[in-house]
Every structure is written in structure tokens, then in C-alpha cells.
Length: 358
Image (cartoon, rainbow, N blue to C red; front, top):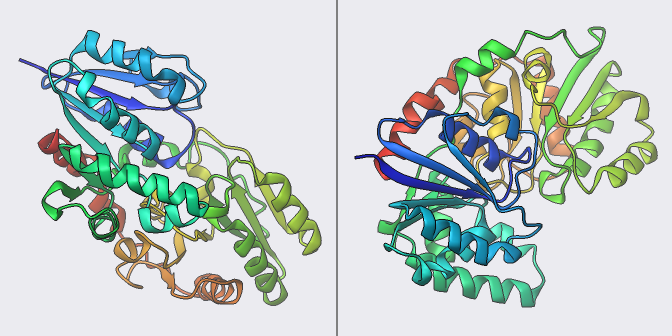
């Protein structure tokens, strides 16, 4: 008999967690699972890529907290064996309503960010409240999925949770899809330039302000460089102002989200991950899958594990514009180290780990 699996996610916006959910629901064995994807709001660019052979439920709520009653009713109507939730606030809500769910389903939560760094960005009062909620509710989960080994260690120590409850499963890469799409469109760059790429939501976490300062340093030594930042978010106007202040407007492009970003990776000369912190950076994996040279800040968590220190790319150990600029310049003038690292994260391998856990 198939296991009833409910996967709950706020939306299908263009973030890393949503891309992981898309990969999971597209590749789980249909002979084993009856899948119901529950969206707090059915929106975002990944909606059109969802498979047609699963049931999709739209709670049509603007916020997670406004959807709680609808969520309880839907879960009790479906009566899943297992619930998989991914993204912090929603994880807490599902664990909080656990006692109201029929059939006592196993609840598996996937943590999207490194907690110690993510919560430290909150005000003292908010941090105290969130820390209390996590430490109270996360132990009630059947399993907690961390995205890498260092995140697992962070969760167990920061939330005071037994190591036996936390496992790590790396994010999956659909290499077949990436290879099929990376060169089907024209080169988006001016080939007279050395083209640098960064991808991600335009938020403080992603460190694009640091990247712009680093890129300014790079342009002084390599004038024919061009930086493309691919993403959307609340800091777009701030970043555009910084571009003007640094007098690099002619050498920087901020491009909105693309449903097929792979040509941007494939044709770039170097990909840069400038994040202050991460969960496990999908964009770095995608760049490696496209065979692109990579530079990454050694932030919590993920880059060090992905790049194996400096084996598969350049790891910048100190956060700041000058060290990042040095890393970018070393990449521009250095060899490509990416090799076949991306195959370690192939979806065929990772989906088996998810199925064993589910």
C-alpha cells in the first residue's frame, strides 16, 4: 500500500528551499507514495514546473498564521502517514498543531538555514521567543533534516537536541535537467567581457553589498569585467544606489529571476557566492554542475563541505570586500577546479536518502 505523504511549503517562489521541494516531488517513487503538496499560497515561478500526477492543495492564505485552521482541516482530511515541512516558521506551526492531527502522523522537518546565524539577526526579544519555540517544538519532530554536516552540528548544539534526532541530507541536483537547459539559449553576456555571476534573493544574508565593493576592487585590476546579479528581493533599490555610489553602473546588471538560469551559469567565467550565511547553497552546486569556476565565502554552512576546502573552487576564509576581491581575481586568472563534483549531489543518489527517511 502506498504511503500518504503530505509536503507542506509556503509557496513555490524562486528560492533554494522551493527548488529542493520541486526536485523531491518530481522524483519520489510514485509506486511508494501518494503525494499531496499543500501550499499556503499557490504562487511563484516554480508552480508551472510542478508535476501533473500529484495533488496540489492551495490554502490561498497570505500568511502562514492565517492558514492554520485550513491546514489542520486539510491534513485531517488527507490523514497522511508522514508530513514533510521545509522552512522554519511553517515547521514550528506544524509541530505546534501536532496534537490536533488525526492518526498521529510522523512529522519530518527540514531546516533551511543555519540556526545560530539566522536567529542572531533578530532583535533580542524576537530571538528569545524564537529560540524558546524551537527548543520546545523541534524535539517533537520525528526527524529533523539538516542540509549538511555542519548544519546538523549547529542544530544539535544551538537547539539542545539529541544528535540521534537530526540527520543530514544534501540538496539534490537534477543534473539531467541542468545539462539539457544550460546551453539551449543564447549566451546572455557580452563576450568581450570577463563575466562574473551571482545568484540569489536580494537580501542582507546574501552579501551582495560586500560583492559590489569587492567587484569595484576587481575592476581596477581587470577593467573589462562585468558582474551580473540574478535575483529579486527587497534590497534591489539599495543595491542599485550602491552601484551608482561605487561608479560601476556600466559594469553591473541586476537581472530579475529566470525560470531557466542555467545559461547564465554555463556561460559565466566565474560564479561568486558572497553570502554572510547559508543553509546549503544550491546556487553553488548549480554553478559546479554547469562546469563554472566558483568562488565562495567560507560562511556557515555548506561551502567548505561542497568545495572540500579549496579542492573544487576558491574558498574565501575571511568575510570582507578585499578578501573576496582576491578570491575573484585568483579565479579569473586560475584554472577551473570544478571537475565532476556536482555528480556527488545527483538527484538519483539524494532521493534514495529522502525515501529511506520518509
